Length: 247
Length: 268
Image 1 (cartoon, each protein chain N blue to C red):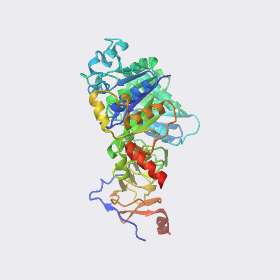
Image 2 (image 1 turned 90 degrees about the horizontal axis):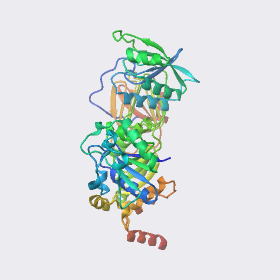
Image 3 (image 1 turned 90 degrees about the vertical axis):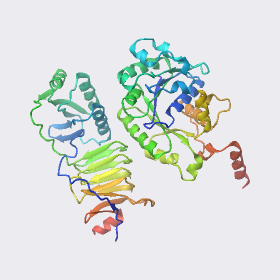
Image 4 (image 1 turned 135 degrees about the horizontal axis):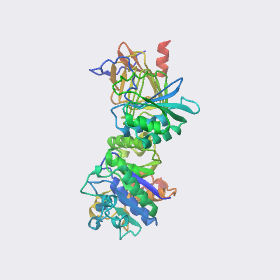
């Protein structure tokens, strides 16, 4: 069975080392103490806020009932009203802000004033790397132009990925909708990573360190498709053909 | 409670200001008190389209600075008694105002008007932030072009993050003949990508350019052209009426073409 082979691009992106793909973004993870929210450096606050709201709205809650939240605010200077707004926002999603970590004195004071437990570390102290979360990420939303989803595990999207939007995942990417944007599966180098979509009409496809763009022209098949890597070449097959190939 | 609607698009030149001027006029003619706010500081146009340029004395900036009262800055339109304009400052740029100040200004306006329509500048930077600050609904204006739809999609995402709901869609400058020939995106294509409810389809119309140059909103004409009729239907939909969307093909035809089509249908 011959799978249609896409046009391989000349230059693959630099081979990424295993890393936390969500670092540098607004990032939630959970452990035995509850949920942790990490704020990235180097964005402006509007972007952080938008990303936070988008994630709260789109993520299928992976916490049950009222859950304590630790805010890792690093070197963000957060004043009293900002912390209050943030606490009010997360409480709509049953998250209760309890602990605030910061390297900034004024943030520590604001957090203490509001009665949160504060972990004030010196800015000189090396920030411990945020552990990568490789559990699957479930999203229910439209990923619109300008939105980037980054996750170290697999990503399952119920909704469309629009042109100009992107999903970068350490594992597989399943789009239960129309895939029209950019996807990068196995972004940490996993060559076995797959991309699945109900309707595949992407801007660009990447698996591990390979890049491909879809063939130009031609009509879209009306069937779900799978994208996979075979001998370092990105291939597309209908779901039926792909499953038969595995047999 | 009054409705505060921001008219936005991301991309420039898709017809935000024209639609704001006409929709404001149409709503005022339905008996509502309407204020249109030009939030495009530094590149103001709304006064021109309404033909009120030479009557601007104070602008939103002077109101915010406390140099005049809000009522002094509002320009009333003599042709449309229920309609007022709050002009933007032409001499300053978008960073002259902060979102919080805009929010307070819009708040005050909303207490005395049924509708506040905010004409948002192109782009997604500070000017956009200011324009959406006080809004509680949005109308996205786009043309059936890939670039305009892409930018509109980004804006819909930003409005979702700002928790401004609902966001409704106007597809502007549609050319039915080109859609029929598959040379232009159809309304369905646009709606499929943006996934927000459609509130109106405005066909491309030469009369729009004429009316812009005259400073007289199209909906005021005694014999409103197709684009003006489309805008009047949008006003009625905003008012909660259920108004059918006419067959897209009929938006581009003259009366005689339509009549001929009708007769053909009956005969054959």
